[in-house]
Image (cartoon, rainbow, N blue to C red; front, side, top):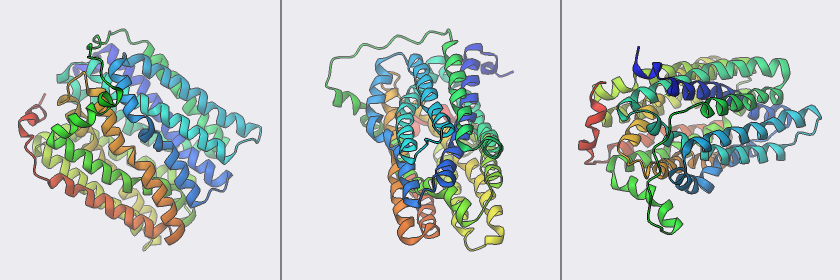
Length: 412
């Protein structure tokens, strides 16, 4: 048995995140369906809803990185989970009394988005403190596989729950999953390394330390540039995907849940084989091949407009194989990022990379919503898919970071 699977403390984190990820996928599916079906949201409103959920990364990302490097990270994870559970529980409560509004969905999306930024930055920085550096590829692989499995289970569960108890009530499962996650993390007994004392410097200088560290590493720099481009255009798809599937393709919520779930199947495979692919191809080539494959497969989404009779099949292929390639890229990116970054600045590097990725999603979502209002959803999807495919060109920029890649090219 691999060492981490018998590590009780890691298994607590693994269990909590697995349950939480399932709940989050239920909300990811149910919340926009609530906006579309119950509240009659327009394309522009869907863009705004997606934007406020992700815009928090731009607002508090740098502060979250400083906090993650100043404080112990486990308490941040626990209180973030508790706060998100309380916020999400207000949606089914309001729906029960027929008080749910689009404004409330915006407010809850914004608030949970802010808290999620703090959680994600602390979470990515906590793993290297919980397990040995040599176990990071395995740890990221197992957590990635759980996240991918949640992408299978969550949308399917969401499709069932939406049919039985309506979309807002389905979101209650996500609130409960955050409680489980908080309890699991609270049960971890392995102490974090003490915080490294730092000289008193101005906040802005401390906050920008992550961006400076990324710029100092040529490969991290191009990974950040690729994230900025891919996630901006990906934000367009994120804002319009469910609206496109329900209104343009007239897919049922059950069929939509199954399609999204196939992406989870692909992500499981991608997470499982990510390290092997990096070893076989070399990390730079693995990054390029996985990014290119993911981008080309995204083109199948707007292509479904031209072949309506095969639309569901095309979306299924895009989800299955596109998510597999994306998972290979993301898993290797996170491991590389954790390995080449000093622990005392890791939180701020993770925060800067979050801004380069998730921070671009709301900008793309806003652009996608308004482009769709002006030119239609299919035309906007062509623009976004083309942008994602072209983003892999950043990975062809020459760099000289090869000496730092040796650890990823050795099998465990």
